[in-house]
Length: 217
Length: 211
Image (cartoon, rainbow over all chains, first blue to last red; front, side, top):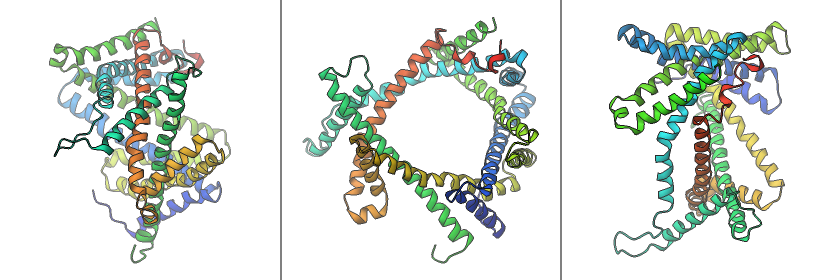
């Protein structure tokens, strides 16, 4: 579905943008209005999406058209959650929660081992990178593979709490692992900052290009 | 029985999913697909609880004339007005989509872009701690940021390569270690639930009045 900016839409978008950016100056009523409007619209969007993609097709197509009346059972399970608003019958709200937690438990035990084992096996594979042409060892790639293995083992040892850190054999790897984790978290932090900055650049592009029509933007 | 029966539901549902995945007959009967469908339907009908809770809180604000209750009114009008429009018009309705593109997307991306400024002050505060760990965190963040922006390459051509190296090796190793720990933790938790030792999900719903 394509979207083109009409003058009215661009003005609405620009006012919304400035209302949110006004928070950089100070907490103010315009920002609070934008914030509440955002929460209301976002929740409404979620409700409509849920209605349009799941609730309506289940009732209209699955139950009424295809006659799958068994689906009334999960509907009832889902609706039981609203009993938490009635103190005397709130115990009924435990059933949907039990069903979802049970599903999650089964799903974790049935599907997660394959993902975990693949990661572990890949981490401890051969460290030597061999050239496809001559069959010789590629030095930098091999070094990187070994470094990765060292980084992983030391980072894992940081989470190993069974033995006290005073133990010299485990103390040093855990100390180095802490550094590896900090470098990793720093990289994740840097990526997050870049994502936020690109969002901000996107806002400036909208203001200058779609709202103000500045040439060359 | 008000706690034992839900616990039985949890255990049986868990075993049913495992049976559907790990046994040939479960696969033949497509039990996993059926369970997925049941899970999706039950959650879809329960998801309205978020909107209901939000409404309860803000109706309360309006009733008690709390400070800023006018914003609560705005939120409720936006929430239920937009919901009504979507139900009448459909998810792809013209006015519904117009409000989405002109207003909701703009509010969403601007609010998240605000974090760029706050995350920068967080970095400054971390730098002031002056420990080896904080320095490593910031140096790594700076290299990744400079390696991902054109200005970094303009300063020094090596920044993109170093950024890629940090992402591929120390970052992947650290995240994998965290992930392996999280996986092991989740296994322990699900085993505790399946054995009926962990029952936190059965309590707390409905507050202290629940019996």
